[in-house]
Length: 414
Image 1 (cartoon, one colour):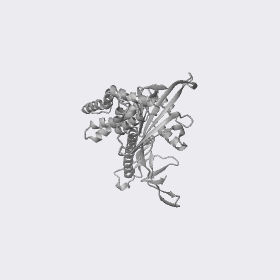
Image 2 (tube, rainbow, N blue to C red):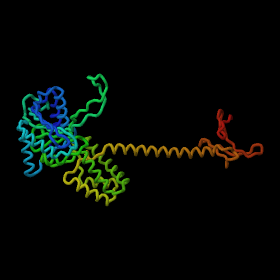
Image 3 (cartoon, rainbow, N blue to C red):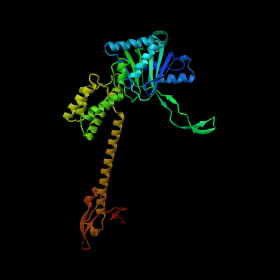
Image 4 (tube, rainbow, N blue to C red):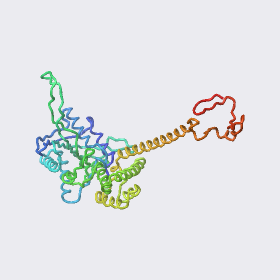
């Protein structure tokens, strides 16, 4: 991976009223029947203030998230088709969105490949960033280091606002509010060329997917001409399926083994995050085999996990962060801690009950007791002896001034 977190943040920081340099912005509104309802083009600086901020928010969202999670660095595939896609994107960027035919071609490609059941809006922005040089101290300098020209595309769902009551001013009453078609934040988007090492990388695309959503491989491959990748959410789901499917119908054993594996992965991720110099941990087939062995997974099941893992992930192993289910680890760890405490409480309650029974037996009336039970400090036990008092055999217990005794639970004055 060449794009860094700093690269993304540098672009994102510019998307504010005082620093944004977007030139032209174009859009295409598509209904649920994949029919184009509206196409438009605007100079970004000439937008009304409210619209300016809303469109800026959409662009900014397309640069949000985690690299390797929902922000993917895509590489172009090999072959003529991929070369054509890359050439097209370069031409579109170079047109500064002034060529309607090129825009229509992009719209048509997205509409054909994007599987979405509702209405949506395709937005395309053009920008030229005069990248400032960096001093050795890291501070920005005024002179330019490079001119970075790029396009940003965002695909946003358009949905009806929820039914609600509102004040109808013209009628001076409360009534049903008119429902509007509202443009939401993007489900997916891309930036081309990618901004990498504070410069332009024409061989890569920065691709955005809304957290928790699929990556739309058909769009990655057929619109961008890139090699598809899974998002973190997809990696996590695929890894879970690989492990649990190997156990067949034994769900209880599968859940237990999967948790043990996840707990080990959690430790690996924590160690890597504690030392920023360490690279992300990749889960190779060998690593997964070791994890399964450590989780005491039976050998036949381990072999099945290995085969399924290789088939699912191939030559692109997922990073540990992407397959880690932190919530599962936290919840199960807490559940185990709670269960251990409950077991400890149960053991203590059992011991207390046994102790109470013994005390109850010790304090039973004399005639119900099997004998005399006497409790004294160990150091005084050797001073207790038997003797005959007035012809009666007695147990003689020496006492000190001020001592007291309890007989069958009743305090006695000595």
